Amino acid sequence: MNRRNFITSSLIAGGAAGGLRTAIGATGDKPALLGGTPVREKPFPKWPVFDQTEERALDQVLKSGVWNLDGKPVPEFEASYAKALGSRGVLATSSGTAALLTCLNVLGVGPGDEVIVPPYTFVATVNVVLQVHALPVFVDTDRSSLQIDATKIEAAITPRTAAIIPVHLGGNVCDVDAIMAIANRRRIPVIEDACQSHLAEWKGAKVGTFGKGGCFSFQASKNLNSGEGGAISSNDSTFLERCYAFHSNSRGRAHAGYDFSYRAKGLNLRMTGFQGAILLAQMTRLAEQMHTREQNAIYLTSMLKEIPGIAPARHYPGTTRNAYHLYMFRYDPAAFAGLPLAKFLKAMRAEHIPVSAGYSPLNKEPFLINTLQTRGYKKIYGEKELAEWTGRNQCPENDKLCQEAVWLYQANLLGPRTDMEQIAAAIRKVQKYAPELVKA
Ligand SMILES: Cc1ncc(COP(=O)(O)O)c(C=O)c1O
Image 1: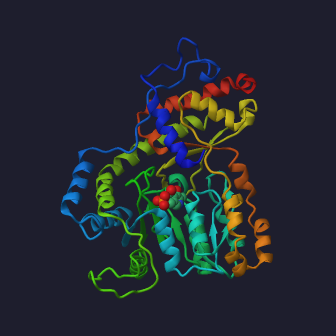
Image 2 (image 1 turned 90 degrees about the vertical axis):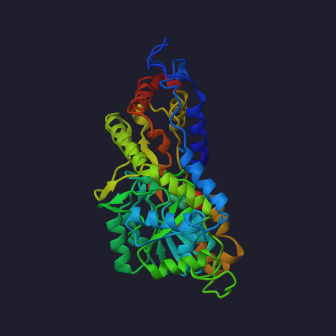
Image 3 (image 1 turned 120 degrees about the vertical axis):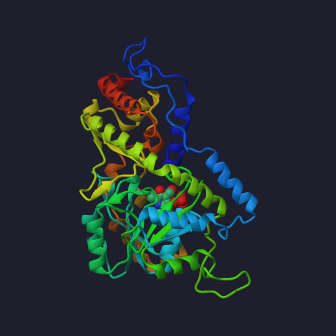
């Protein structure tokens, strides 16, 4: 199950059942998969959350007749998100993918260049590298944090490395100090993929403000959501103006309607007024939702870390705030009588806890291998180098992680603390009955 299917099914699973049952029902505390009563029946909170604030905001844009970025909402959102990040500027885009693509283009990353990426991320992080015909170079994952292993970045740098795209995955934060130290020493620009980590913090500063650009996604599943949408934050106003021109078909911010003067190559990756209006409305809820997710996640971690074989994602010491787009942990079958991960997930879902196995190894994706075998790639990099690419891009730790990771989704953290108790209770129940579940 991929992340978006997981999110859809977690909402369905959450919404499918009726009233709350107690953990120990008529069938005792047996797992639901063995005929017992599910730990949970009450739906998890629905996502997205909205009311008349969003309705009014959309109505205003509609009636204004200015539906594109020339109206008030997009610039207002940019100013308000920049303030929330503590960033000098923000440029709104049509998606997180568009934000990443814009940054790479403005940095001039192109054919013959290499870009360092993690293998444990949403495919867009790598797709944008392929879009500019650069070569993705994968750096293995630190399984304890589920983030890129910063200690392995330096060894992956070559004279052709044109950018590093660390991802702050799942709301958690990668090792910013270590990454920025290497990048600054080697003079390589960093584009932070903060698409899943709105308002997460490293040493009190928001992620997405450390690199040349920080990219955010407001796609439907995200903690800040306008269906689709994205943004680039940057403290470099010249860089941001160049991003503006790229995302607006080569035209500068101050162009008048029939001013057809162009700055550089570009595309149309603009945000609409409707997206801007929804985002401004959603931002009124963001701080409180963040607080609820954080409190619930801390409580959940306090329970899960006591369960043998369950290892919640580690935070690096500089992490002062996790945005918990995902609640991620690792599962060790050895502590569950050898119960395979797939069966653990099935047993948890039967308890109405919507868990997912997360990503598969991106560096091994057949579509990626096929892309590197296309005519253009062969011309740019040569067959010999492309043949060596697979060997150079092995990520054994990430391979292991993909066999042991378990995710919960951010909306599962928006309810009462008792929801967290039920998640922990379901895991304990599955563990207690693991020998029977293995045989079932
Ligand atoms: C880590 C990561 N990078 C990039 C993206 C791309 O964002 P979007 O879906 O808004 O294009 C996403 C979102 O799905 C993501 O999770």
